[in-house]
Image (spheres, rainbow, N blue to C red):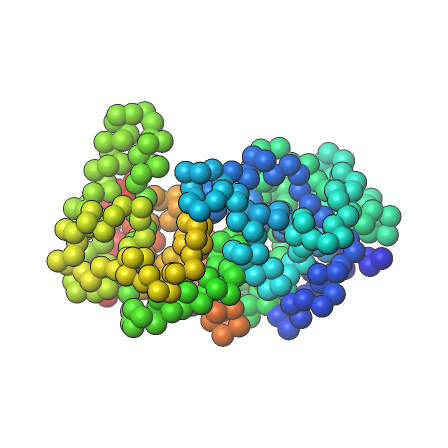
Length: 363
């Protein structure tokens, strides 16, 4: 069996995406996944990305869930989606060797790491030769381990730097960490193809807005004061006030939202509005909200300007833009990152909390 202490950490951008990677004998998984398993897609991508950082540090193949499942409120067309319907597993394996939990020959969970044993300890005390299948027990949401800095994220950062031909200096702002999957680099071929076709039909520069109201209004506390503030800040007049400082009149604006198109009619006299409903042909094969969101997230990162609903999700968006400086993201991965991924005025490009209006991007 291979020595797992010297595998993926040395990988470069020319590493083959499949071959021996999918058949690596040493596996690693985090358990249990139940706390994360019914959360939204961005949440699950963050948690799985965190776990894959440790797999990269150990040089082991990470065992992914066979399906991405969610509560009914997040998705239509079925509560569970095959992982490889959303993601390109072979391409992901060129960064971190992965396999699906339902794959033929899945050996099962194996030995559980003792509490307090970090990656260095795991390499020393649980070598692949005697412990080919290893797991770590986590409590709560998986992504929290990376926020607590208890996961060695450096090996995966260096793999990404080489694989994406990222320019120096390579800093925390350009490291994948929780955003490996959220970057969009590893969405499936059909998802990327749909996003490319929509961009082709748009035909030129565009800006984008993601407006999230329905569930966030219902979950708002303390109500009714919180609901009133969120409702007011996400009404068309507030959107218009926030965006017109960055998006010129007459520009094309793609809108992703659970609100119907008529809700945005006050904006139609200012910008050329486009919605998913304008692209029924490229989206014909989309059967669930997660796939639609994946396609829209690729449109968001490719925009000139991108406005988010909440400040914290705007921060997550910027971390997902870590391949922005890559010279091969478009040619080798099929993902284009536009000026929306620039840090200029980033702190103003959200609706809640209300922006300060202190920054104005040059147009």
